[in-house]
Length: 231
Image (cartoon, rainbow, N blue to C red; front, top):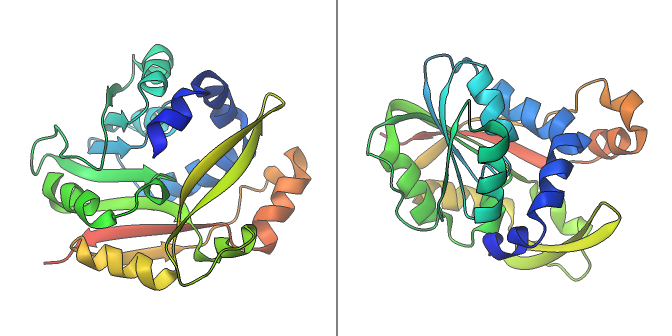
């Protein structure tokens, strides 16, 4: 679902992802915090988009490969961050061209909600992870059913959101699912939840964008999970 819609506005999204306080002051810091010390570790950043999280992981000493289904976004990531990380186009719903047991950490920032069936995707993550490896993922909070009209909490369903980038509205579709379906998908993929967080944005968000700060501190938006393979 993801690649074509992002190819259409890749250049605008690259700038949006860099400056947008939801990503810069909330999502990326939360993923990095849950990832912990990545120095000397091999990291696979799936759904890397324009490469901002990938680059942040590399700056912290990781050897990072970023994957994204959008060729346009991969090109943007290479142009901006190709000196510090590698980037390849890949559909994570298909087998990955990554060696088994070669990765210490998989990061998946706001990408799994574009996937209908998580089990084969998580199965690939499990395959590429070394013993002791983990997945750190941010997803839409199950309470996102309040955001859209006509949604039914207990269904896994496609919803469409509208983002404004550079004054231009862009429609983006993804899957929303209840908490029970999320945990069932994690189990079916061979993982268990090692840590769960509902973080707050960095304090500077309050001064930089009070509206976004209010949004992110008064209702749940994203859910952060650290997953480890079941033994």
